[in-house]
Amino acid sequence: MEEAIRKEILYDLSQAINILVQKDKNDVDQLRVLSDHGIEDVAVHKNLDLISVTVLIYSLYKIVNSIPEKDYQAIIQELQKAKSGLEKNQLGKYNNSIKIVFNLVRKSNAKVKVHFQDVMDAAKIKKSAALFEKGLSIGQAAGLMGLSNWDLQAYAGKTTALDQHEESIPAAKRVATALKIFGVS
Image: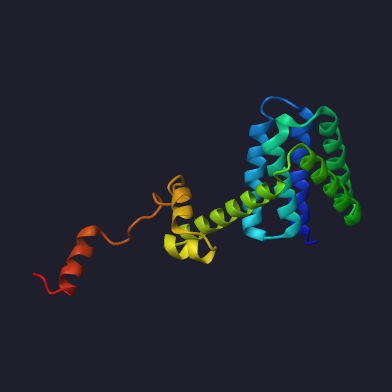
């Protein structure tokens, strides 16, 4: 596993553990923010280990309030084991703990496959938005990521990407150039 990916996963696991151990009414919001952070990482790295942890955190965000107490404590323990295994580069121990957490989450809510698709779609949209911000048209950015223009437009409309564009040539000069091209005096 690449070191940068390992560090991202360790960060995500540490944050998730801290949120779950504190157990307060803001858990859902904090897990949503952490999930969004993970989705941005998935958009950049497209690493399977990172995707699985992001899907796991997103799933926890979706079901944290409905997890039975016994399973809640087991999830925290397994996340701690996964973190410990990854810190020691014991990938077998890490993978086994992540698998157990997925099973606990699936037991509480069977929609993990839907959550996976949600994470992947969100990552595609964020990556497309980044391409759009770099100067590609909405159609080009959406097409490169296999999305429709509508998917990206809904997201881009909520960002400041459209407001960040500044024209380097004044409008009067552009109009004069256009009139000159078409021979209008």
